[in-house]
Length: 566
Image 1: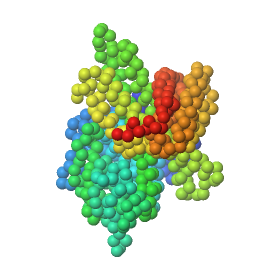
Image 2: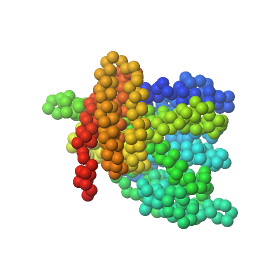
Image 3: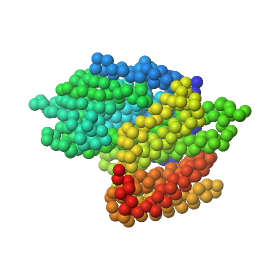
Image 4: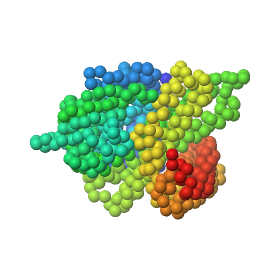
């Protein structure tokens, strides 16, 4: 039986990144928790050993139980009865096993019963869980909502709810409504404050992942007469108090073990989380950043299993007297799949480290005043995290869809049948580029970092690395691609028209993403020779993609926009 952590050495490579020492030392406050908790680490090596051991438990559970249950969960799916969601039998078994293994509340502080892990090893666990069962990661991974409770809830709310999450209770974020999908400013679920100061919620939410969870974070309209985001607040709803029923569960293409619910709130008691009017402006933005990172991890997990299924089949399937992996057309597909997987994963963990850095400084700022140097570093990493989270979510989800597509292609006609896992993988992959903000919305979030120079500064930082001699030609090539990128950005900005910039945004963002991911793969190859092949293959992909977008922008005239007005 495989262990999904130990059978993938790439994970340990990313876990042992040089920046992790600083992240861990800050997160552990120089290891002072060791005086209060016997399971707290004594030093950096002890902390890394803790992460390694917990990830090995995750890998064992995923390689055995969760992966074994995935097919049955897909067939049975979730159902609705008496106003509640009913999990598939395998999902119930998976959740119970995760609770018993202590894998809930991983990133929460120890004083609430958590493990106090940084975001990076937590995201690594999400990557592993997604490989085992993409839909189950939606349930397990929503423990990340506790971060919002921790950051914005009162101390009383933290003490009340976070230990329950750490003990295994599930969470959801109830944002979307029938008439408010991506446009969350249009949310109309009504929050009414009673005379005694308590709140009740009334209305309907739709497309809510794990909508019958134990603890909900709910976006609702608290300010009478408002119609925009300034009238929205965040609330905590506790299932124990009643008032919410599941009206239906969506019949989805994939991730069928994850119940996607339509919820009816009827005088449901709730608690205000944080300040009024800040629900969308501040708290949902924090939620969505975490959600983007979570879907990027889910996408990488899908890319991993798609690549492995395709590779295994190509090695065993024989045609014309030899294994099909020996045909150049097939081996090229597999090499490209692996390069896209490796590029996705390296971007995922670079992003998670940036998120770790700024979040740990934010947490320290709750305890004491930051030094000027610390505040500057927090600001730097906050900006980088803001730039890379939409890039990571957008590009990794697109690549996971491409890898799932190619997985079926390698299988040929067999891949179209339900006898092989790739059919389920293909269906599960499709949602990743849609939910928690479509790829198009990720471009909207990312484009300002292309036009204001955030991505360009990052490229310069990577280019300043002293690369091994054999990697120098690729490093020089990336400088040439960066010049094409500079030219494209300048050409778009020179037009001075926002509509034109919006039209070209996807091309600029993809160019930046291709260059950044290739640099990150080059950095991986600089530390670990096992990434040299993927860095070379991805370099060919980046060259083609950057050249394509560069050529399009260079030859496009603003008046030609009219051709695209359908």
